[in-house]
Image (cartoon, rainbow, N blue to C red; front, top):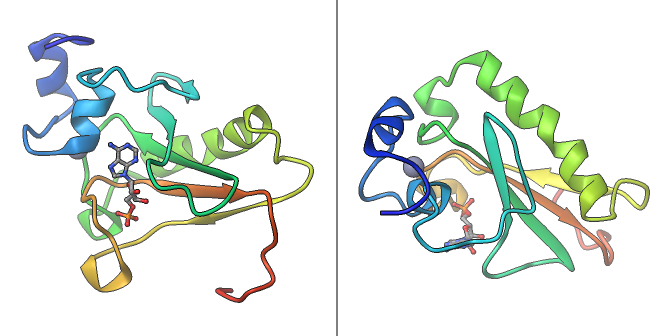
Length: 126
Ligand code: AMP
Ligand code: ZN
Protein backbone atom coordinates (compact mmCIF):
# COMPACT_ATOMS: atom_id res chain seq x y z
CA UNK A 1 0.00 0.00 0.00
CA UNK A 2 1.26 3.47 -0.81
CA UNK A 3 0.01 6.99 -0.30
CA UNK A 4 -1.88 6.97 2.99
CA UNK A 5 -1.93 4.82 6.09
CA UNK A 6 -4.62 2.25 6.86
CA UNK A 7 -5.82 4.50 9.71
CA UNK A 8 -6.34 7.36 7.31
CA UNK A 9 -8.13 5.04 4.89
CA UNK A 10 -10.51 3.93 7.60
CA UNK A 11 -11.17 7.53 8.57
CA UNK A 12 -11.99 8.27 4.93
CA UNK A 13 -14.35 5.29 4.76
CA UNK A 14 -12.21 3.80 1.99
CA UNK A 15 -13.68 0.71 0.35
CA UNK A 16 -11.33 -2.11 -0.59
CA UNK A 17 -13.26 -2.89 -3.76
CA UNK A 18 -13.49 0.71 -4.99
CA UNK A 19 -11.20 1.74 -7.83
CA UNK A 20 -11.46 5.45 -6.96
CA UNK A 21 -10.60 4.80 -3.29
CA UNK A 22 -7.51 3.00 -4.55
CA UNK A 23 -6.60 5.84 -6.90
CA UNK A 24 -7.05 8.32 -4.05
CA UNK A 25 -4.80 6.19 -1.84
CA UNK A 26 -2.12 6.40 -4.53
CA UNK A 27 -2.17 2.68 -5.28
CA UNK A 28 -1.82 3.19 -9.05
CA UNK A 29 0.38 6.27 -9.07
CA UNK A 30 -2.32 8.23 -10.89
CA UNK A 31 -1.31 11.83 -11.56
CA UNK A 32 -3.60 14.29 -9.82
CA UNK A 33 -4.49 17.39 -11.80
CA UNK A 34 -5.56 19.01 -8.55
CA UNK A 35 -5.94 17.95 -4.94
CA UNK A 36 -6.90 19.49 -1.66
CA UNK A 37 -8.00 18.26 1.75
CA UNK A 38 -11.36 17.08 0.46
CA UNK A 39 -11.07 16.13 -3.21
CA UNK A 40 -8.71 14.88 -5.86
CA UNK A 41 -9.03 15.42 -9.62
CA UNK A 42 -7.55 13.22 -12.33
CA UNK A 43 -8.06 12.81 -16.05
CA UNK A 44 -10.62 10.26 -17.20
CA UNK A 45 -9.16 7.07 -18.66
CA UNK A 46 -11.52 7.29 -21.65
CA UNK A 47 -11.84 11.01 -22.40
CA UNK A 48 -15.02 12.06 -24.19
CA UNK A 49 -13.81 15.63 -24.83
CA UNK A 50 -10.34 17.17 -25.19
CA UNK A 51 -10.62 17.95 -21.47
CA UNK A 52 -12.32 15.27 -19.39
CA UNK A 53 -11.34 15.34 -15.75
CA UNK A 54 -13.00 13.68 -12.78
CA UNK A 55 -13.40 15.49 -9.47
CA UNK A 56 -13.70 12.95 -6.69
CA UNK A 57 -14.19 13.42 -2.95
CA UNK A 58 -11.65 11.64 -0.79
CA UNK A 59 -14.54 10.41 1.34
CA UNK A 60 -16.31 7.39 -0.18
CA UNK A 61 -20.01 7.78 -0.87
CA UNK A 62 -21.67 6.04 -3.80
CA UNK A 63 -23.67 8.88 -5.27
CA UNK A 64 -26.27 11.49 -4.30
CA UNK A 65 -28.62 8.71 -3.18
CA UNK A 66 -26.14 8.08 -0.35
CA UNK A 67 -27.12 11.55 0.94
CA UNK A 68 -23.61 12.97 1.21
CA UNK A 69 -23.02 15.80 3.65
CA UNK A 70 -23.92 19.11 1.95
CA UNK A 71 -20.53 20.41 3.04
CA UNK A 72 -18.89 17.67 0.99
CA UNK A 73 -20.95 18.69 -2.03
CA UNK A 74 -19.80 22.27 -1.51
CA UNK A 75 -16.20 21.13 -1.33
CA UNK A 76 -16.57 19.24 -4.61
CA UNK A 77 -18.24 22.12 -6.41
CA UNK A 78 -15.74 24.64 -5.05
CA UNK A 79 -12.98 22.62 -6.67
CA UNK A 80 -14.62 22.61 -10.11
CA UNK A 81 -13.62 26.13 -11.25
CA UNK A 82 -10.11 25.60 -9.92
CA UNK A 83 -9.76 22.43 -11.99
CA UNK A 84 -11.31 24.20 -15.01
CA UNK A 85 -8.66 26.92 -14.72
CA UNK A 86 -5.84 24.37 -14.40
CA UNK A 87 -7.14 22.57 -17.50
CA UNK A 88 -7.48 25.89 -19.38
CA UNK A 89 -11.22 25.76 -20.05
CA UNK A 90 -12.43 28.31 -17.51
CA UNK A 91 -12.80 30.98 -20.23
CA UNK A 92 -13.90 28.79 -23.16
CA UNK A 93 -16.52 27.06 -21.01
CA UNK A 94 -17.06 23.63 -19.61
CA UNK A 95 -19.83 21.23 -18.66
CA UNK A 96 -20.23 19.19 -15.49
CA UNK A 97 -22.04 15.86 -15.47
CA UNK A 98 -22.69 13.63 -12.50
CA UNK A 99 -24.34 10.21 -12.85
CA UNK A 100 -26.45 8.58 -10.14
CA UNK A 101 -27.13 4.89 -10.54
CA UNK A 102 -26.53 2.33 -13.26
CA UNK A 103 -29.66 3.51 -15.07
CA UNK A 104 -28.00 6.89 -15.57
CA UNK A 105 -24.75 5.32 -16.74
CA UNK A 106 -22.85 5.33 -13.45
CA UNK A 107 -20.14 2.70 -13.65
CA UNK A 108 -17.92 3.65 -10.70
CA UNK A 109 -19.89 3.81 -7.47
CA UNK A 110 -17.80 6.45 -5.75
CA UNK A 111 -19.34 9.91 -6.15
CA UNK A 112 -17.65 11.99 -8.85
CA UNK A 113 -18.24 14.88 -11.19
CA UNK A 114 -17.13 14.84 -14.82
CA UNK A 115 -15.68 18.13 -16.03
CA UNK A 116 -15.81 18.29 -19.83
CA UNK A 117 -14.37 21.02 -21.98
CA UNK A 118 -12.87 21.86 -25.33
CA UNK A 119 -14.43 21.02 -28.67
CA UNK A 120 -18.08 21.66 -29.36
CA UNK A 121 -21.16 21.06 -27.26
CA UNK A 122 -23.73 21.50 -29.98
CA UNK A 123 -24.79 17.85 -30.21
CA UNK A 124 -27.39 17.87 -27.46
CA UNK A 125 -27.48 16.52 -23.90
CA UNK A 126 -28.81 19.62 -22.14
P1 AMP B 1 -19.45 7.11 -14.43
O1 AMP B 1 -19.92 6.42 -15.67
O2 AMP B 1 -20.11 8.43 -14.19
O3 AMP B 1 -19.46 6.21 -13.24
O4 AMP B 1 -17.94 7.50 -14.75
C1 AMP B 1 -16.86 6.70 -14.42
C2 AMP B 1 -15.70 7.20 -15.24
O5 AMP B 1 -14.51 6.71 -14.66
C3 AMP B 1 -15.71 6.74 -16.69
O6 AMP B 1 -15.75 7.88 -17.55
C4 AMP B 1 -14.40 5.95 -16.82
O7 AMP B 1 -13.77 6.17 -18.07
C5 AMP B 1 -13.58 6.49 -15.68
N1 AMP B 1 -12.58 5.60 -15.14
C6 AMP B 1 -12.73 4.31 -14.77
N2 AMP B 1 -11.58 3.83 -14.28
C7 AMP B 1 -10.68 4.84 -14.33
C8 AMP B 1 -9.32 4.98 -13.97
N3 AMP B 1 -8.63 3.97 -13.46
N4 AMP B 1 -8.72 6.17 -14.16
C9 AMP B 1 -9.40 7.21 -14.69
N5 AMP B 1 -10.69 7.15 -15.05
C10 AMP B 1 -11.32 5.98 -14.88
ZN1 ZN C 1 -14.48 4.74 -3.10
